[in-house]
Picture (cartoon, rainbow, N blue to C red):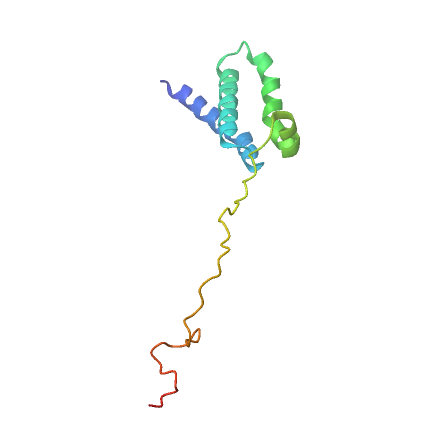
Length: 123
């Protein structure tokens, strides 16, 4: 592979990261972000390497590239679909015990030292 082609590929992949980073900051899901990155990179490569369709692709690519920065995340979400779902709440389903809890044995004060003589040291 020629060094020029590798340089074009590297530049295209790095340029595609900028709008994807903006979508990431807006809270989009990783799967959609990867797909957007691939689409941006392929479009940039086509514009740079194939002169024929670039006449039609350049305006579309410019609009798609600038859209995440100009439009707010909520506008893009309305147009392109929902963002990552909100985390689901944790519901405690532990059954409540209806039986009374056992108390301390008779003659034992809660929090008292069991080795200490309950009579206060008198024998």
